[in-house]
Length: 84
Image (cartoon, rainbow, N blue to C red; front, side, top):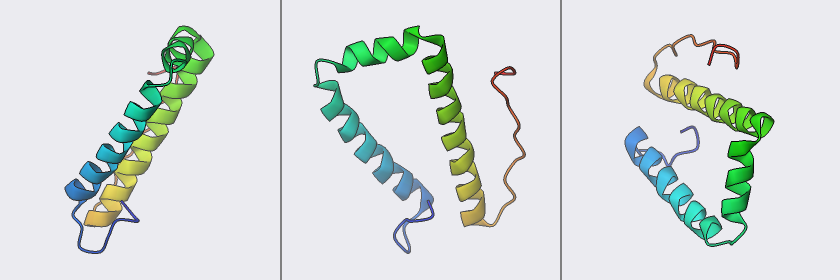
């Protein structure tokens, strides 16, 4: 959000970012080791929890960036791994 092109809307920036990530994912998915890696993360509690914490951290950062871009106060979120 913070590094989007001047004049680019938030939805446009999100779409561009998601398309890039989709392309990167498609490339990784062609690697024969990708399915094994994904399974390892999902089946290992510590890795699964870490992936969840990272997702939540990025989600919170995006919320703050969007709030900042539109001049709003971000919602106050405090979710710990124990609460999730």
